[in-house]
Length: 294
Image (cartoon, rainbow, N blue to C red; front, side, top):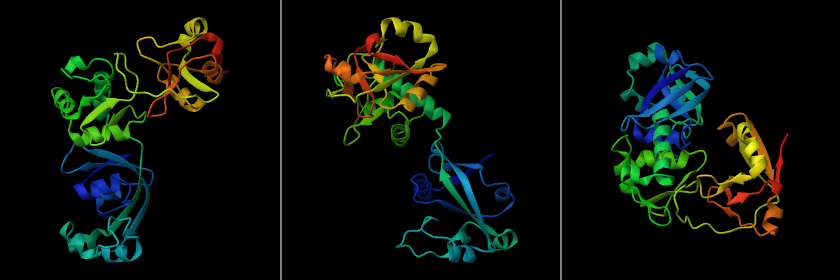
């Protein structure tokens, strides 16, 4: 079951960053519905588009906040070592009468890997602009694929809600680490996957002995005949471990994984690049260097 709670900006970011792992609440009928294993979606009261989810690992119930403060580790509750922790702090949120009536609870949680569906759609749109069609939103990329961050936000905001905070969240939580900022975050670009001719300043590197490529079984006949081709991208994308290739393959259908004899390719003169998010890139992989995993 998923519950929804609001948090002020400071505790919101403390918990989102992992510094705060116990949320203190009145154990009223609403909180009595929470069970261990449930998820809670926390919403920033200052920006309701900012959300994250946690899993409930434990419920610490007490008769009063005074008892709770004497028992639980207060740094996990959001207090720093330099901050004086006073149970009377909670009186501004809950009356003494309600505290005596219901008791209180410390909800111990851990972050879960979750992304808001709307944020995911925005991320895909940003990927579309930065890797394939910047002109669709009137965006300009330089020769190295960089876009002005403020301009990107302005272009995206024509059709979707976006702020600098949300953009930073997209960049930091993207499971494939598709994007990168420059040092002062004034510029942003996709790390790889472009279909438009840009130079993302990759440095050629000697690959490991083996690499892997995940795809769907429906493409096997073509790959067995022609090898791996970059198609509409600038490069073929290769994974540095088998399990990542399986995950990639599942995105396209029933997965199949090819092992690439990258050491032999490199010895034969093929050039390899490694992107900043650890994806290996090369122009093509002929069939002779491929082995289909069972």
